[in-house]
Length: 122
Image (tube, rainbow, N blue to C red; front, top):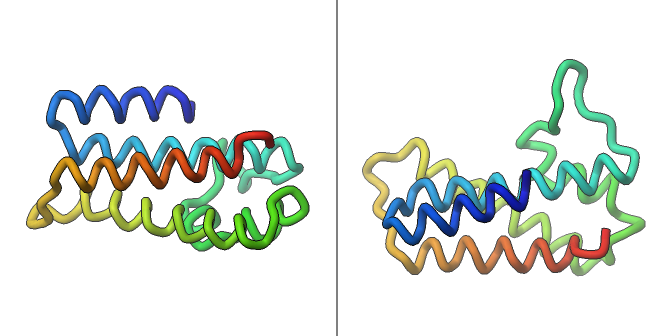
């Protein structure tokens, strides 16, 4: 799902749909964190196939379930990236007055790629 969301983000960006691209960047990260966490023994909340957004963007999954697999510096960076992408996604999805430029999407992609590099071998 993470790969598909990342491809969707690229397609949306190339067609000028910046809000959608930012949304898919966040969901690519969300899906990747969920996948890695599930391989590390994280159990999804009852009745859910994925974690809560709070568990991802506040860093609970990273701090509690990936701490033995991600060094402390990268843990902090990963939590910060998740929070940044979540904020961008909320603005893109729920704030019609927010305006976005190509540079915002490049920032989102850059953060996503950094996070995926941190999680790459997991």
